[in-house]
Image 1 (cartoon, rainbow, N blue to C red):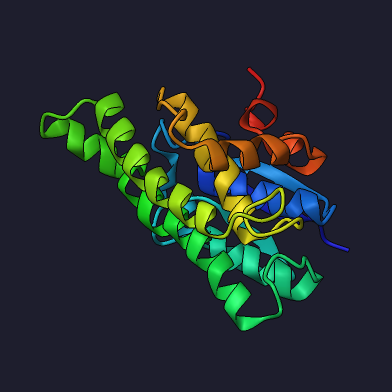
Image 2: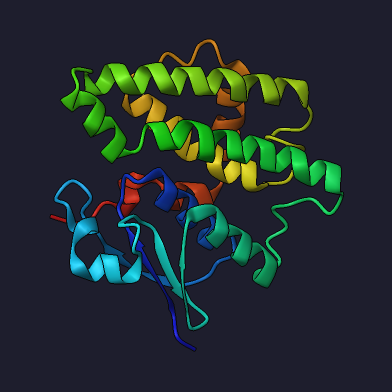
Length: 209
């Protein structure tokens, strides 16, 4: 059987999500680093894999998949991850939380967006702290509204949890004050004890040397 191959940047929160998903399924995979800081995502090889010039890209089942949420939902559907509830209303709630992170917070804080903001006079840390704090305020509200269980939506890991931990990591990286978000930080702390999340952490994914 051909092993999956993940084109990955160790600090990318989107790649972090996919590493978590692969680990939760105990799916073996090989990692191919793509240096975002060095601009490798804009090179011909990466553009051939993903014309958007982004990571992650997952090669699996003879496919070349892009966009982290699409990858994770593919894995969920083909490997029975159980990350989306069967009930449509519950599924919508999980997706809403995941999308609040992946489609509201993350795009504004994408490296190429933040670099452009810096070119217009913002500071990198100021930009990141402002938009991460603003986004997490909304996520905290969603999680408090559905406050049950130890994770985002109950006692089972969902798509929302897979998105939350990388975003909390990113918030800490940019010195965001998380004291105003006790619900999401408690959830993240519980998730961070799980081996699949620990193994996916950037400290473990960073290339040697």
